[in-house]
Image (tube, rainbow, N blue to C red; front, side, top):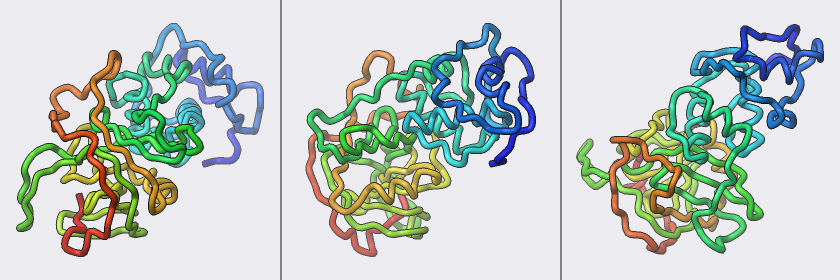
Length: 281
């Protein structure tokens, strides 16, 4: 990230937001987050999408980080990390995840919904996994501190490299157990900073985290969130996996998310899965 911005990068009405926040302080980058809420949506809007570059992208990243949606490196480029962070933010605000920042997303950035807990009277330190919206939320001191897009079990049988099973992420209440720093390679692929919470099922970083459930059972997270999650999910940390009813305003990824119909309320603790079950999911 450049420490100095020599001029305001404004290319039309789309970036009226940038003018209000940045122009007027020459030679220095201004933290836009505190003033973001005061900036109106431009009358004529051009969507910002992956590959876009400019101070408006940096502005969005700062805003998302402030709201608890880590966007990766705070650069001027709309990169894949920001794309998946925008998906998480859109889903958390009842919007369909798309590959751009459109007017509804701008409005949500100005007036975000509060994050609602999945577990009533839950522990102040916990992680909640929403199978329907494909969202993971870490709570600390009773407040959401990290919200991430995820991809969980695909809800179908699989048979790969001599290992067969059903790709399911079971609902229930668990606790984080064994962890492995860095990259781990199993029968089904590679995992980054895996944290096991239900036998051989782990939360782990992955290079492939699509908008729909696609794993063998584990909870895939974008690589840029894996390090923070590894730090937050200490052994014994509560992990609650739920499939809540579809509420008004919460859109399901059309045609992609299967109805896994996993049983709710199962309780368990994470034990060492053993070498045979440490599979990339």
